[in-house]
Image (cartoon, rainbow, N blue to C red):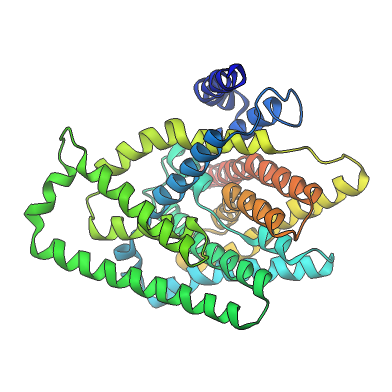
Length: 389
């Protein structure tokens, strides 16, 4: 009981003060939360022990993180893009994965590590772009949409890899692929049905977004998230896919979701998501530091930056200046959440050991710190060039 109370107090202190410390240290808040968890957890002070309630709150926070990320996906906006633009947005993450597997093969790294090098996530991307007031600019929207497409491709890649790791190319693998396809088809049918229903009866749905004590909109959004997450888990698909797709469906059906996003973001980013990142740090065990570990960490971190920057040069075909394209590549190099998920998944499947898992989490932390710094440096350099001209 005393340990539980101490855990609650220490996590609450972290949720309250880490944002201020992170701003002081000029690192992303999520990275600061992980570092805070590392100090309190297995690696150093060992003041907080993993527990059932922490497991639940952490999992809930992660599902909400993916759901909110899905809410950012505006399928209507993506569908209006030209074919050339769509191809560029798809080509960037695909090329990143190809380069990641090439480098992984060159250094004889496990396939899961190559996936961790290539994954793309929008968590830090959105945070930095919002902080710099760039999210509504052409450059910001371009990097954000590339990140969204990359995140979808990354999640699907992880799902396919999980199926392959468990079943190879046996019957169960193809059955899993069929289930995934059917899941996506059903999700799309649900989307089309809800869109039609809302179009025919718009007035009946207005109260979802109005202020009311029952918070119907929040209830429906969370219900959709849980139902699709459970459905995904039932057919052996990662629940995060269900949460992400639920967010996309909700944002597409109800286009005016700003109030819902604001309400969910308050409790999500203000409480549950920080618990997820702190808990990652608590469970993290620093690997043995030796020349071999440092070399591998350097290779994976350098590769993570390289495989995002090179494909991002394709953004020049979308009217993005070369230096900004490089800056966008640096920003996409911080897929903090998905690298952590990939590491934990690999440990659960027995593909990597605890040491390699620790190196991947360290990579997530390093790229989470380096990517925004390099992004800011590239943009600052461009402003200097613009002023000189």
